[in-house]
Amino acid sequence: MSLIIDCGAHTIKAGLSSHTSPLIIPNYIARTKLDRNKSYVGSEVLSRTDMGGLLMLLAFQKGYLVNWDVERQVLDHLLGPSHLGINPQETDLVLSEPPFNFSSIRDTLDEILFEEYGFRNVTRATSANLSAFHFHTEHPESPSCMVIDSGFSFTHILPFCGLIPVTNGFIRIDVGGKFLTNQLKDLISYRQINVSDETYVINQVKEDTCFVSGDLYKEMKVCRDEMTAFRDTNRFPNSGIFIRYILPDFAGTNRGYIHDPLSKEACPPDRTLSLGNERFSVPELLFNPSDIGLDQMGLSESVQLSLKRTPPLMCESLTKNIILTGGNTLFPGFKDRLNAELRASLLSIHDLNVTLPIGPISYSWEGGKRLANTELSSRPIPLTPLTFQSYMEMGHNAWNAKSFPLFS
Image (cartoon, rainbow, N blue to C red):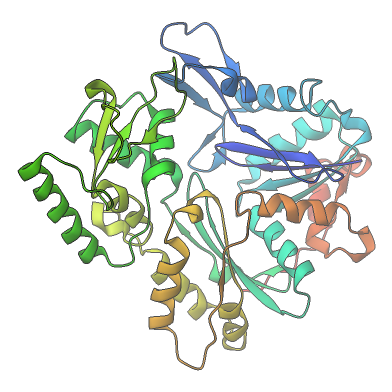
C-alpha cells in the first residue's frame, strides 16, 4: 500500500494510491480568541461554524517546516482512524518537500518518518518534480517542461529536462497566497474596517473576488469611473469591478458572498465590504512585486530569466510545455495574463503553450500517485525510495548513497 502526501504550508493533500482524489485538510492548528485552551487540528478546523477571529498556528514558516509539534499532531490526525486509518509500518510513502530543502529539516523529517512512524520506505520529491512526472506520463513525447508552482508561501519557476531538474533555471519569487491575503487584510483594514485578526475570512474574500487584470490601467480607469458614479447616484453598477461583499455572520451563513446589485436584499452595514481596485491590485503583486517595494522580478520576467539560464536547445521545448500549479493560478485571468506577457517577449519562432490543469492544487499529488503506481525499475534515480532497512543501517547518509543527476 502506498500513501502520497503533498505537504503544503497551508493544506495537506493526502491519499492512498488507490484513491481517485486526495483528501485536502488544513495543515495547521487553530484556536479561537474566546477559548485559547481549545485546539482544532487539521480537518477539525473545518467542523467549526464560527471562523471569526481564528488564530492559526502553522507548521511552516516562509515555506519551510519549522514547527515539528504542530506537524506531528496534524500527521497523527491524518493517519488516524478518523481519516486514512493506516499502519505506517505496512505503508510506502511518497512525500513532497520544498526545493533546496535544508539538510537539518530533511534529517529531522527522516527521524520522524522512519524512527517514530516506521514507514516501510520513503520517496522524497519536490512538488514540482511530481508535477513534472505527471506531465511526462501524459506527454512522453515531450522532452522537457517548465513548472510554475504558485502556492501559499512563494512562487517557483522550475524547468525540467525530462525528469531531471535544471537547477540553474530555478527561480523563487517571495509572493504567495499568504502574502496576498495579508496585503488584502491591510488594504481593507486601512480603508474600511479592521480585519487584521480575520485571516481565514479574508482569505475567502480573496478567493471569491480577486482576479488578475489583463490591462491594469484600463481596469483602474473603469474602477475610478464606477466609484465616481456610485458617489453621484449612491447606486452600485449592475456589473463591473466595484462590488459589495457580504461577510459571513456565522449564524445563517458560514462563507461570505458577492451582493447582487439587482437584489432587493439590504446590505448589513457592519458586514459589508466595498471592493474596487483591491480586487486586482492584490494579485497584481505576482506580476509586479515592486509595486509595494519588493525588490524582485515579477512572474513573466522570472520565466524569461529562467529560460535564459537553461541550455538554448531546451528553450523551444520548455515554452511549449509550461504547466501552472498551485492555488494562486486559479485567479481568473492568471493564465491569460502570463500567456500574453510571455508571447510579447518571446521570439516569434518559439511556440508558446501555457497549460492550466483542471486541478492545479492537486496536480502534484496526482503525479505522486502515478509515481507510486510505477515499478521501481522504471523510476528515475532521484525518485526511487529509501527503505527503512537502509535508513536504520546508514542513517541520514543513506540518501547520499544514491546518485541524483542535476543539470546546471
